[in-house]
Image (cartoon, rainbow, N blue to C red; front, side, top):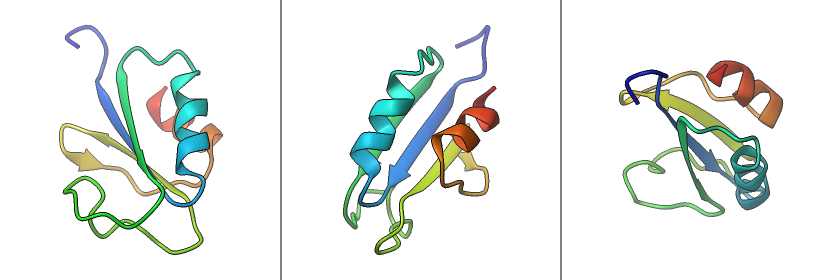
Length: 79
């Protein structure tokens, strides 16, 4: 954590599980990936669910960048 920036990646939407799996298989040692396929009141998912759309949020130290919609875009934000 001290050598590389640490990221929290939040995936919300109907394809959340498959996108989270792709991100986890990308060998990112400095990330935690969480997902939800439905609306949730957990703090990290609250107010992020949009029906029919899968959205990826890349966050660092409690601040999230603008949402993206593909694994490629998310990986660019992490690199």
